[in-house]
Length: 457
Length: 103
Image (cartoon, rainbow over all chains, first blue to last red; front, top):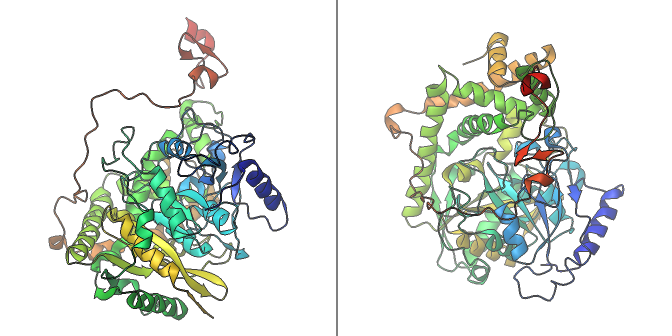
């Protein structure tokens, strides 16, 4: 964890981003921080003086909240997210708002209206997404921790692509109040860190029951940092066969096997398991998430939020505002969701996807009930791909979430932790744990961090 | 299942989106490619799935009846160019003239 004068941190980020090697990680940077951090650095608060970057779909008072959309360019929220209030109470300083796929819909941060974020490990490649700006900001060393959000893997996947730690909590652990809604039954705020402990410390700070979010669950905030030192002796780590298909890249498979071997040497018991309905995860997710998005994004009508495109009557105004304000991927998902929910197709798509979701959840419950403490899988099927490679092929883009979406459908916690590199690009290993057991992901993640990762070519 | 251009236009109207000819063709192609993938859900055996599609097994929490003050909310008068008697003063919607409004 890095503490420093936040005003210096912002100056450093501004200078780095203005240069030829800039990453386009931020949409806005704080302007008025003089004195904000200096008084806090020596304070007792858990994050006193720690600069934190925040994904730009989490509402802040001091900075605009754009969601990476033309439609919300410059939009100022009249209230701030509970997570931001908790950050400030913990002494942290928000140094800026990070780039993201528009309304968090994407897996590469290329659908942002403010341009793609570049991967610090190779600037011709994507950061992953949708929280790509936050992942890049941590990977580049601008900040040691950052908030992101997940609906289908948007913290874990960019964490894997950028070589940092990404921690997605159990659904209901962190208040969604002030997180701009995409698919409300899956959206969760998550944490990035340079280390497992940094991510754990940040998640601890923003967790807890919030009466302002009806889906917030009344459980005590977890103590995660302590878990990092507990080791994995005696833990049963399940290895689901569906997440290691024959088609998996051999280099990634090799790094996963090496990481499993390290866990075994550290005292964990490895056990093969099966999650048979995970094969339905991508089709299920790409019905349910767009269906919820089509409803949630109906609020952007040119009246209440952001820009308005004038037209002859109110219906034409709605259409003109939405058609020019939303980008291609957002329109695609709104269309898909509207179709899936429309008369005659509801049972075939939405009803069926809800059933598949129940089965995916049941698979996890059965495996965890059988005595498995955590699951270990690759976070992504590939390393970071070149900018532009998949932007015109939505199905190919969606496949980069194939190993992460199940945790969102089931509501369980998950972490991506760096386990090595392949041709100079980071590879992430994913740890999944039962509902409310973020501490187990921290134990396993810290054990992997403590033993050196591999490289492959 | 697949969709044709007419169906895509119908969905666009429902979604309050306007698509030009190029966008319409591209959207039709994209939706068909996604729907082809989504059709994998057809392989689910009906007998094998919970009949109510219920996924949320965890106990939900009831919000208390207590009124909770929303923290750190800006004074609404600071957010709008015009604010009067506790209301935002806004331009009339398209097609409505200010004179009609005041009559």
